[in-house]
Image (cartoon, rainbow, N blue to C red; front, top):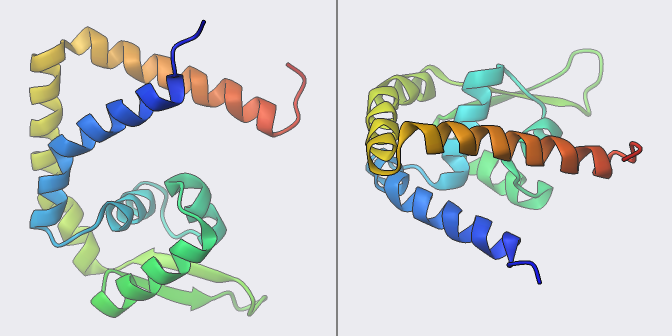
Length: 145
């Protein structure tokens, strides 16, 4: 009988977030807000549907989070000139400054994690999770297995 992998992944996520959540809270950010800021920082301006996929946030939730983030000055939204139904979300200078402030703190936390569990375990975990996501995504896209 298999162990409960979804539950194990949730438990691992919660233990990881316990390390990082105080850093986000100190910046006045929620986890969802940080995922959006990080996705925009790493990818540049994105459409909401792209943010939903990258950040694993449902569309209805994303709409509310983006509205609050816009009110707080974290993001801007602009319509595409050629299609007014489409919106592009971008980081503001304020959010770029948050990313710069957070970078050394996050790196320090990752170094602490590597000291605690070992750099090889962290490296192996990246490889395993990337492979799991890649293979599961193939199944979702209807590609042959």
